[in-house]
Image (cartoon, rainbow, N blue to C red; front, side, top):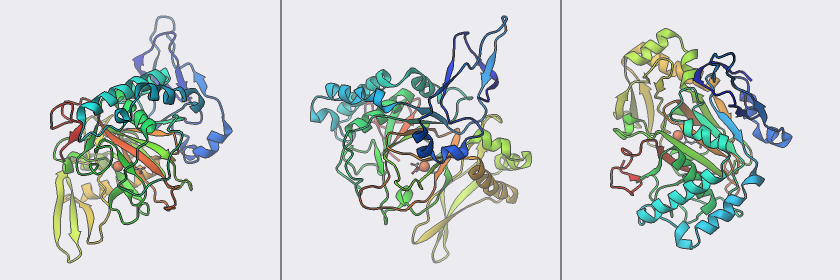
Length: 402
Ligand SMILES: O=C(O)CCC(=O)C(=O)O
Ligand SMILES: [Fe+2]
């Protein structure tokens, strides 16, 4: 394993579990075919990451990974389901609705947290707890092997009146380990969960990120240039069902890794002048979309980058431009480099992808919808690490006004 020097000192007995086949900087091809390496069933390797030797502190540092993969054994986690139905004894316990019953929802989230902390192996919990606080952590964690609901119904058309209580419990419990899960009114309101969890499944004709035919360009979710202020610190995608053709790949690109591949003048240009999104109407009219934004901000060795993506609409297209030619050229060059250095994650049933929305950029390849109930079906919730600023309305309301 390619561990290098630096970061936090470790105690003599500390070890890190590192799961084959993910290995920093060399596994993007393997990440693209998880079905293959799953079937190989290679056991996890245990690496002694660092030791204290002769009184000197040995230190480790992860290179700028895109994704840390943690493969769990589903058979070890089936007790999660049993415990779930012991904690959630009445239908109304798990049929919470964040809009109509915020207190009941708050209680449900606490119970989900309790279950996840109980069932998640310590190393996985440890990785979650470090996601927002350790700059040397990978900016995304891909956990596979979660034991979901025994019967996952056919992937529905949206919006639906369906529930996946055990899958929802994993999602909310994982989110609570990071901070506070929250939904966005408007985006998420029209479902049976009252907006806290959004379903992503292909529905031709439906706009936005649910359109399967689009190659979803690299972006950060809900950046301040469009939200006005609050940005999600992170979000989680949990797959109730994967794309049967394995074409839908979620792309992750670490900003640290991307910055290392850009030239200093490109980085300077991206910090120097703002970009802006313009909406171009069919008749030729142009209007601004959101506020201008700087594509690169923050510390040099851990930059926050903003790439914006919005799918074209039948009546208008979007373009991202700058008055500074070098900035504009660097922005589009960075997107190309980002695509080249990203890793692709094929989310399949029982997988959760936990994303730090400041430290990486993400996208998704296009795929073919089946529309026969076998389609990819993800559950998604946003996470606020600090929470206080996440909710514009009083606790325990978990919904944000856009
Ligand atoms: O479908 C995916 O894998 C990712 C979609 C996306 O960009 C998002 O949920 O924010
Ligand atoms: Fe996104």
